[in-house]
Length: 331
Image (cartoon, rainbow, N blue to C red; front, side):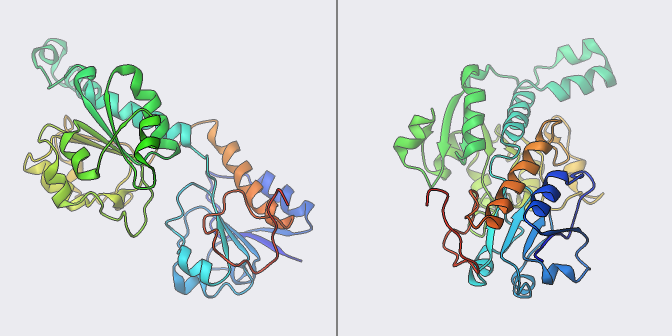
């Protein structure tokens, strides 16, 4: 009997009723466990929330056909080694697209209009005192908003922000200038975008080539009055360089839903920088009441396809030579 195994069944994701039903309908054994249990080495299909699969772990998975991640990003799984070992990797491709785009838009607007700062000022110093300060607020239609990464989420952010009148700039190395223009942004190289934008919003996956893509040199390109918003992965920004830029007034502000270390250490300087200049949310952008059913459905669809002998619609390493024969849906 084949095994469908979840080594890290996060309590917030359960119950896993749809996954269990799909597995049992195909004659499989559905197991909830933890990474210390040996079944992970004996499972044909592994479903994972946040467990890391470095090369040395993947090479022990002799029976594994498929790893499916509960989420969009697969930076926790070494794709090259999975491909080398004949293991298909899939994800939940549209999970939380709406939520993350909404959260990004909320952070952009909150920072642009200084909403959290005004609220804090009223509570601490009173209504009249809050009214006395200009707070650096500018008309939205005068601001340039740079979108870095025009995938599903980045494109949705542009749709959200366009009606406010922002001048939209865009960078995505995987898209042509014509494609970028069709999404309503002015295409430009990353360095140029950073130097022109008043607000930069990051929507890129974490991969070796994007690790610390926003580094000391690139932060120095940004206007001292600019703000950076990150709802993608913490490590696309060199956090130490970002903290230095904020502390030395090389950059005005940051709105961050993700950090390099989560949760942050108690002595992380970001927690002590003036809250007028730093907004933090606790990796919450993907959250909503409606999002979990979609997530369970997409994960179930991915491994259900393999159980039926088909490629998952969300295969992340299409060059892999699968251990088992798989056909495409149209075949």
